[in-house]
Image 1: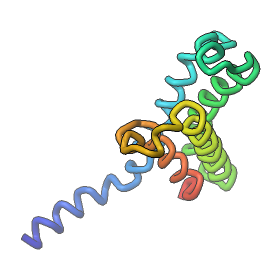
Image 2: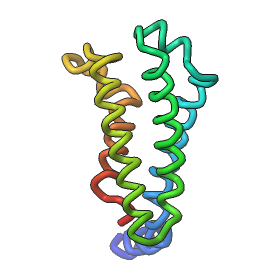
Image 3: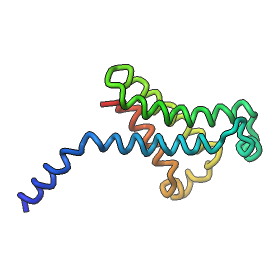
Image 4: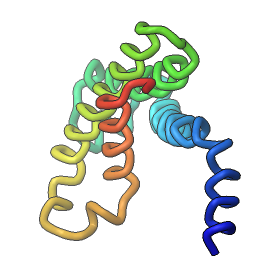
Length: 135
């Protein structure tokens, strides 16, 4: 059994670098899709449903797309600047998700629904990259 465990560990050790890459791309693509679905600007659905100004609604869409792009690009820049912009993308994601929870899903904090939605995982992913950067 120990031999099998060692073989499995050896096999997956070849892919450790890909783990954060999968997380990075998954979160970035989710934000790109959410943001691009709000185009053309200003996003009328966001304005009408949440009674936001056109400026704020456009800022939300641009922030979502920008966070996705910056999160991907930051992963390919192997210096302190890449680490910084990855953390910046994580920060933007965390701030956006906190606002999304407060504005769109405030009732989720008192039910288990929070933990059955993608929003909590996007928040956790943003927090991961804010804390970890490219390390």
